Structures are given as C-alpha cells and as structure tokens.
Image (cartoon, rainbow, N blue to C red):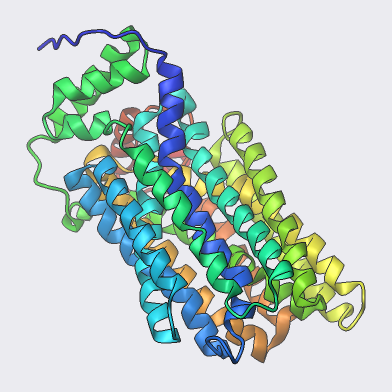
Length: 477
C-alpha cells in the first residue's frame, strides 16, 4: 500500500544533526556523572564530610554502576514498548532528581541511594541513545553518528575534570566543594529534556507499532524524498516479516542465530570494561596521587586524561567511517593492554622516583588515546547494530547490563586493590584480562561495516542459522 505524506520545505541534513545533538546530551550526562566522582572523592572522603574508607569509597562510586546495569536492562525493554524518545524524556527528569539528591546527601547511605538512581538514568541513556541514533542514521553515516555519542560522553568527562580542577583548586578549603561539583550536572539534564521535546520518534519503532504514516513522515524529514520511500519499504518489509512473532522476550534468544548474536553483544560489552578504562575514569586522581602527585596537582593533571579522550574520540569518529570495526577494535585493545603493562612495570621500576607521576600520567594518556579512539566507539556502535529491530532494545539492554555489572565490580574493588596490593599489581591484573579480550574479538566478533540494519539482520540470520561452524564464523568476518 502506498502512503502519501505532504512534503514540507526542509534541510533534512540539518534536522538530522539537531536530532543527533539533542539525543547525545544523554551521553554528556553519562560522561559528566561518571567523571565528576573522580575529583569529588578526595573532598567527599574528608572526616568532616562523608568520612569515606576504601570500602565506602568503592560503594559510593560503584552504586551508580550497579544502578546503570539495571537501568540498561529495564529501560531497553521499556524503550521497545513505549518508544525511544519518551524514555529519554523520562530519563532526563530522573537525571535531574538524582543529581539534586546526591548534591544534598547528608551521609553515605543517602548518597548511595541517589547514586543508584542516577545510575539507572546513566544506564538507560547508555543503551537507548546509541540504538536511537542507529535507527535514525542513514547506513553510510551510521558509524559516525552513533560514535558522536562517544564524543559527548568523553566531552562530559572532560567538563567534569575541568570543573573539578577549578573548584578543587579555588575552593579547596570549602568543606562542601564536592557538592558544587555534583550539582552542575543539573544543567545538561534540563537541556536534554527541552531538546528532546523537538525530536521525533524513531521511524523504525513507529513502523513496528503500525504507525506507518508517522514513520514515513519522519523519514521524509531526515532523508531526501526518493531515499525516504525506499528505506520505508525496507523497514515495512522487515516489520511484516516479524509481525507473526510474539512480543520480544528473553525466550527469543533461544534461537541459535539470535543466541550467537546476544553472546557476541555481551562479549563486546565486557571487553570494553576489562580494559580497566573506568579505573582511570573514576579514580584517575587517586592513581596520580598514588604515583606521587599532590591532590591539587592530580586534579589539574587529570584534565589531560579528559582532553586526550575528546581528541581521540574525534579521531575515532573519522576512523570508523574509513575502516572496518573488527580490526579497529583489535588495534585499540592491543594499545590499551600495552599501556597498562608499561604502567605496571614502571610503577615497580621507578617506585618512589620523582619521575614516576609524569610517567604514569603519560601512559594513562596513551591508554586513553587507544581506548577512546578505537575501543569505545566500536563497542557502542556494534552493540547498537547487531540486534534485529524487534529485539534491539532488549538485546542492547542485556549486553550493556553485563557491561555495567563488570563496571560495578571494577569500580567497587579498585580502591580496595589499590590500597592493599598497590598500583603495579592492580594493573598487571588488567593486562591479563586484556589479553583475553583481544582473543575474544579475534575469534568471535563479526564485521558489521557497510550494511543497512535490515541487511545485517538477514546476514546474521543466514550465517548463524546454518550452524555454529568455524567456517560460517569466518565468512561472517
């Protein structure tokens, strides 16, 4: 059936850019909320404030990560039911509420509760924003559009480090300086809410709910006329193919080809975390203090980590449009593992040396260049790409649930490990699991570059339905 939609004058490329920027404020909030704790902990932990021990320090940090795990899992399924746009609007309000709760928390218990709620918003945004962008983007621009969210995440972390340094240096004697660091997150939460009011719903989600006229209308706002109709027909065909199926549930992943995709999604998500990136994101100030910097110097030096992250992501966004995903991820993991190995070795060789803080800072910058330039962009992009439309929210949510659970474990145990076994041994552990991550990607991760989402679905179905033979996996790569 042909659907006619009235044409309106528009610059569809500019409108698509507005949609991308609006949605990725969820990534900015993700970045700021995970980065701000880096500088807030030294002040929050003082005896006249929350008086943190290594255990409660890990608990305050990791409660957000545990919340994020459940946020990714729950919000992904809710996004499939109610729509991506509506869920992002609701999450912006949760960001605001939880930010105010952490800002005014009088003790560790209240702080942990609101950090957990904040984590639900962070996790929801981490699963929904990439999926939403993947569904809005033309396939040849999908890699660059989805990885723009990674730029906003690292941009949020950089902003957190900059404000941490400014407030930490100028207001170090103010008892509640950490509260000023935390409350600044309310601003991007409000921006996300307002900006999402002008953003349309995903055309793929609309079509999946039988709202074909609205789906085509959105496509004609973000594509040229001819392409909008062609893409709508592809989406409509994919929806019809799934129309006889029941609602998405975990049982769907019992099919061999879908189970294989889910395991790949979970594996890629966990590989992102076993690099140890968030030990640097959350505890960068403490790592630099452990290596020999003072608190103020560590806060300022930590800005270098945020700055290189942003620069690396910009490079990664350019690179992801030029090369395949799989080799890009392997190169990135090789770089991060090498950097961690050097940190572990030099922390032993130069222990107590005046040069050690600068060596560690240089190597964390090198680590983040590989992490944010290669590993991060590919992780979020592949998770957003590989699942079929009907299961995209659920599959992404499950994958990112495991990402955040591992993130939680690392976030909780890192300060305990650092205080008990030291910097060198801690990073040797990350080197070992980093090698396992490289092996997983080399053996199991397929290539997704150069196909529409509908083509990817058909590709995975045809490849993995034939059986999980070594030959079929090689062909998929």
